[in-house]
Image (tube, rainbow, N blue to C red):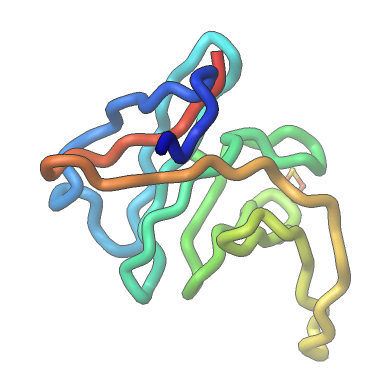
Length: 117
Ligand code: FES
């Protein structure tokens, strides 16, 4: 039984052990860059590199904060499902646009992301 549709391809990213907590790596693709990052708890997450707000590149303008990636341009943040939000100074979490995420797997010590043709 196949878990993924045939149109999904697994793209090699890097050795899994080389992605450190808080590190963000850019995967360049013709269809648009993807960033892969490791959260504070060790989860590996992949999402579009371009912030849906004003298109800042999270590979250069992003930072991992706990379990989320934060766009440092205007501080929108995205969780592991890509849900967007922004924290107010008082700690209120306001909903923002979401970002596309990609499934990540570890295969024989390599990180791979699921991309569509
Ligand atoms: S461009 Fe990312 S928060 Fe504005």
